[in-house]
Amino acid sequence: MTLLIIVDIHISNVCSVITKGSECRMEDSSWGVCTPLPQCPYRIREVLAGQRSATTTRGRCSFEHTTEIVCCPLWDVTSSPKQTTTTTTTTTTTTTTEAPVTNNVRPAEEACQEYDNEISGKNTEKVTTNIIGGEKVKEGEFPFTVALGFLSTGPDKKVEYDCGGTLITLRHVLTAAHCINNMEERKPFEVRIGSVNLNDKNQYVQHIGIVEWISHPDYRRNSVYNDIALLRLRRAVDTSRTVQPVCLNYLPLNNLASYANSSLITTGWGAIDIDGSKGSDLKKTHNLSFVSRDDCNVYYKSWSARIRNGIDENTQLCVIDRALTERSDSCWGDSGGPLIFITKQGAANSVIGVTSTGQSCGSSIPSIYISVYAYLDWIESIAWPREYATWQRRLGA
Image 1 (cartoon, rainbow, N blue to C red):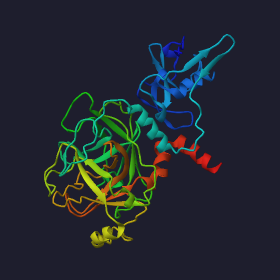
Image 2: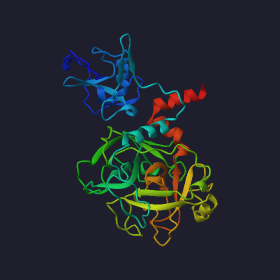
Image 3: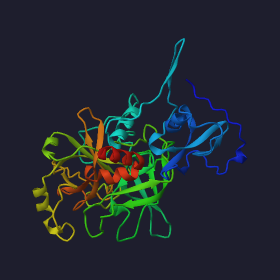
Image 4: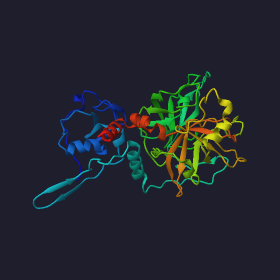
């Protein structure tokens, strides 16, 4: 059934005109994005339920010709109209729409299922898992990797991409807290996504401003604990083969030994040289493996001021490049970037960590990553507030 809404209202009668792609407020004060009605299943369900008509102004942004632009939840924007199926007999007409969610699936898992459905069948690049020494990445291989742009302190105000991040929704980027809350009082003003080369100006590259910087409330600048943050973008990204959000790990990592044969990769625009003296415009990836808490504490015993209680195995992951001669672990400039779990099929399955700190670029010393799972409640409450509140109510039911 094709959804058709006839509107007989002149644009000048709309009290507040907001263009497509702009941020907006939903009725519950959560953030949304102005979207054509046929691309917003949330508003389509209102129409089908008789809760929305041509005269309804609630949740309206503007019009684009005869198409109503509505304020759509960030989690429910589609790239094309969803189809509904109508079955007609001689006596009844039954309209089949999306059934309400009755299973107790947390928001990160629900988003992951949605992302998997979105990219299913698309021509996406498989991840190369036999990478050593930080080789180049193919376009579309890690379409969720983001570069954070800072203004230089020099007179030329050049943009410097000093941290990385991970696109987890159309409007949210996951990164390290020290990238936005640091002694230098520097924080990024934009994100860049869409190409593996920072000098590339192809049609898929997007520069999007940041409107909210949220570091974890328990993060302290003189410590490496709770080093995790979220950024809210000025507008939703335009998805493409080189721009896609990624799944967050929603499973506990209690037994790291069970991941012994898995592939772990980090991405970033870190230094090319081992001493970190030369910056790279290209993303690199690295094969890594987990290190036990006790072994990691041996490496970091000299960091007693910043790691007073040692590695917290509940919130931190210690990871190393076992091919010590390659020394391809995270470099300066990779801070805030993702630690990615790779399946045997060569797919980037989920982000399990955020690059936090290490002893030196390309060092044989393991690096420390913040566990995504340990902070999933905090992440979900910001990235998917409505779904998180609903999920919490179901848990308490």
